[in-house]
Length: 113
Length: 113
Image 1 (tube, rainbow over the protein chains, first blue to last red):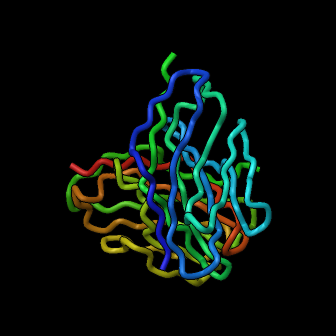
Image 2: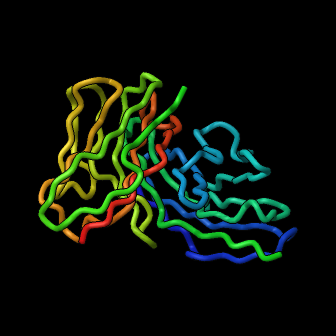
Image 3: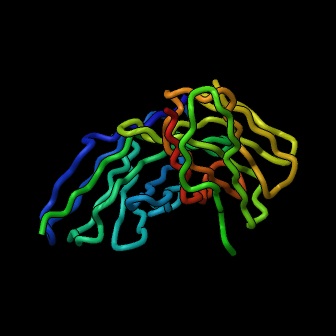
């Protein structure tokens, strides 16, 4: 069985501050991990993914995430928040022979000018 | 490529009415998915398909039906609409299972009164 937990349904940061969105996973098989972003009134789009290559994954718009097996974590970071980063972010997990993607409940990021 | 398209964008239904949410993708993807998104709940899988003629239930299939007669189309049918089906519905597709990116449509917002 697989699941993800996103700590914090709402996160507020000041413009220019560090963004840290937390995701912990549970998986009985080697996981594939994803971060998706959803801007208001839009569908989801992929930010980045981990599929068992480099543990530090770089994505679009300056975001990156690090896979830490010992901590079962895949936290999303960005050094300096921009107003355009305001959105909802979803962590998700699947596996090598899995047809389905399991999503977390999402974290809404607010960026304060 | 248009990617994944969904129609309609918004619909109001009365209790007991039925409707079909349309989803089409032009990427020749085998895997297609229907999700519903409710506030604070993330995305829940309703049904999915691994190819034309093959469908399977997800986490929340009750009250819905699907069919997949072509690779491109994956309609979602609501029979006897209920207020609990008020939600935003997303269709997605991917080329392969496991670590592949899912591509999402823009969503259909449904209100059942």
